[in-house]
Image 1 (cartoon, rainbow, N blue to C red):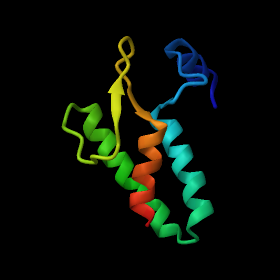
Image 2 (image 1 turned 180 degrees about the vertical axis):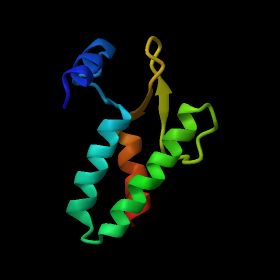
Image 3 (image 1 turned 120 degrees about the horizontal axis):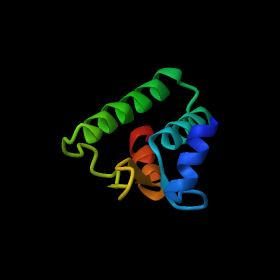
Image 4 (image 1 turned 90 degrees about the horizontal axis):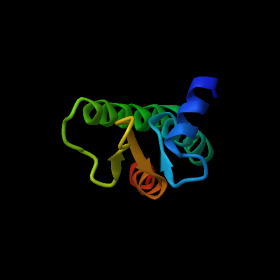
Length: 95
């Protein structure tokens, strides 16, 4: 993790919280998919689907993935996801 990202997460108050940035979600998805599924294409598909949905949220569109719960940070306006909803969404994508 870079210094800028670490400082930003600290300023946002995300250390030891249940909220994840998009980068945290991508890291979590990559680790989990590698453990659960030997199919590389499936992992790429899951991360690609997340990236597409995240890009739409950042641009102001509606959330297409109903299981992914998010909120915007009050100061930084970043899209943050709950760990529980990311896990539920991932389970629905892999199974």
